[in-house]
Length: 491
Ligand SMILES: Nc1nc2c(c(=O)[nH]1)N[C@H]1C(S)=C(S)[C@@H](COP(=O)(O)O)O[C@H]1N2
Ligand SMILES: [Mo]
Image (cartoon, rainbow, N blue to C red):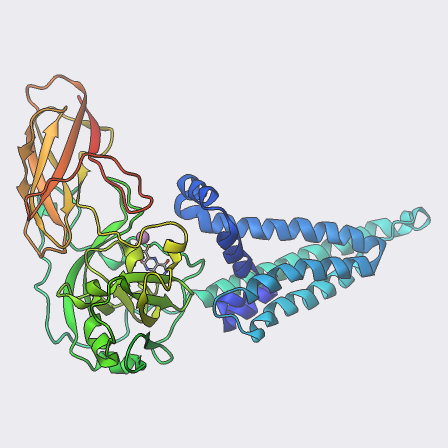
């Protein structure tokens, strides 16, 4: 399996038997079990899944080894049955080709080889020979096992090194034709606990279904537009880089972000408005109700964006730059979509290679097939960064603060309240644009408050004057709502 993984890493990662089985498990796990796993293991769910796959293989091969000890043919049949699982998993990957069976075949052949070798090295079980054979025989056998384990470890290490392809940070990035106003520094200077307006690429949240980061290169990448268009068009990276590129400051949010959660970030994106690309293809019926742009990634992920959101003035982007650098691989290198105002699953497809103009009735995107809404504008929310949850706070003036967003509208105000008392206006940080988040701060005079437990909460008011709802909703199917209630202790 390790040798196969190495081979796959050097050619096409998704043909790795381990990764392919991992994806198959994800695809066939009931949503309830998946949610449970994500809730309990968070972002450790992927290593845990792959570890489990490896463990099952170890147990299965141990059993096959026992069978082979009786009869070699049984061992061979066992290994063939075991290899059939990744063979099936590999061929059900979205972009599977017959050559992708190569690594699995190699795993089978190497498996047979190791099995025969270990059988030859294994001490004979017959009692008559035991006296003179056991000691050196055992030692040679154990040596053989440890040797194969060591080689196996080396192969996995080499494979993983290959999969962590070179960083993209040093690559060149074309200039913007229209620059965005630089994101200013804000309240983080007065209260370092408040989230800075610009999220650095290294700490930008990452959410995707990929078990390993897809390695796509600029030279081979293309974007095709098809579906209900007059001409099917394909762009290369150079085509895109030569266009009039615009910069836009956009705050992205994941539908899985809980109230007060971390799956949200603000960055400067450089790219081409998607509507200009769509115009080159020529949309047949731009005003058709139910129309969507289905975007497809190299890894088979799809997202469905309402066509109107791709065409209006929000500047949905095909982005190639993030905070002045080429997109990091984790965030979709060489190109991704960023759609302001809609949760990431509604169209911020990373490693995007195809845009299909179609309808929601005709095609269902990845998360829609799994019951999530395809109509999911980001819900306005205020997050409390300071004080942190269950913090011990000294009596005096408490600097309450955080960040708030109401994409597509903008943040007009943030209000804060203590222990269910009256709402008070917070001070707002610099405004960037309506699709960007905004910092807020409130100096809470706690000099006359009793010591012990207190609760502070916050709510955002958007530019239309609408106040964030206190009504609680879970993240499924269209995003969480409710107010964050932060408990702290006055000492
Ligand atoms: N190819 C691909 N693109 C994807 C996803 C994915 O699973 N695969 N997840 C989406 C979701 S749910 C979110 S919230 C954003 C997250 O983008 P980020 O990881 O750059 O923050 O990417 C979107 N694009
Ligand atoms: Mo998401």
